[in-house]
Length: 249
Image (cartoon, rainbow, N blue to C red):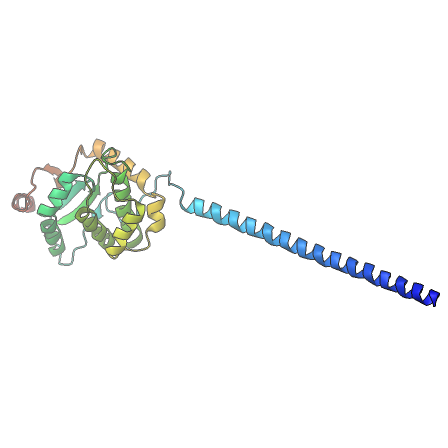
């Protein structure tokens, strides 16, 4: 009996040790699996953070927007363009109060003339009021317009153009932030510009073009109106109509 008890005890001890060995092996497998999952999650998280950072990194290289004509945004004509229709270029800054007043006074008139084919109308980006707000609104608003024309064409730009002037902030304070600019474009029916806005994709080009217009087109402020390449002092619809008629002859 004594030998049987000793044998049973030995077998029980052997089974206990085997269970402990199996349990240790299972714990090790689980621990390794947890470590592997954690490593993968850290890697995925790091990639996601880097990818998000890359997507929102501010653009430093000069990228030219698509769908421009001689650095300007044409107004889409719906009527038949006249053979001798003069070219009217409006150099403007979306923060410029005088530009806002000009748009309220004569913007619709020029767009109607362009739609009818009486003139060719182009918006010429001239962002120069960099110190006119506390959050660089002049550049960022112009960038929004360039994002619209680059990704969706001239009709999208003019929707954003009208919305920016209709919601023009006062100088001296903070203009709408990027989220507000994206919402403004969305409300105007132009979507999908989020990344372009947040990376300020066309700001380097906007700066380069402003310097180019200053030196080559002798533009020093806004609004500046050129008719067939010549500076015009016309600002009211009546003055513009007269100047356009003279340029059409």
